[in-house]
Image (cartoon, rainbow, N blue to C red; front, top):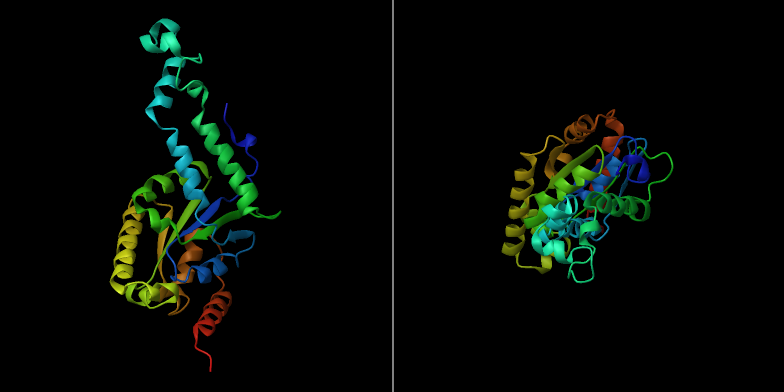
Length: 249
């Protein structure tokens, strides 16, 4: 039986998780800094998209060779597929042992260890999570993997952050790439984010341009998360970022 008490790290943050989904140079560090200003929040930085790869591992268990063997194992022997009557649960089966795999327990075990070893929330954390700019590198699997995260991480909320494509193309390492390619990447990412937003009530979109215009965008973030809004904290974080972006000399 799979239950929450078996996975203390995954179920540890009592108020759940917040994941910041974006791409590089969107102002995600500013946002994660703001999120961490809420009492009891531990929103980590990037982790090279580890969770994406773990989701892929879990997803691999949807392979038909796993699924029909599990189905047959639950049936009386005489009701199993004829071929499975002959080879299943023996070394003659090329997928020997596949019938024993419990995808849900595997997923919770993997994600429990992700929280323990990668997020490592300190004592007193009530909301954990992280920001990642590499979700957009795998848009074809975005919906599936975010749904999986929402399924297994309790009380999950997603914040999607975007920025004007032209500005992104002129920022940081993006300047080394063809501007048209960057604009296309940003446009495709933004469309994917908006598409997912239509399917999830536990998601919101934030534009970098709105953040730096004042505290209204960050006020909406606080409301979305059910947290108290502090205007002074919001202004301090915005101003610190703007100062950081200014050219020196």
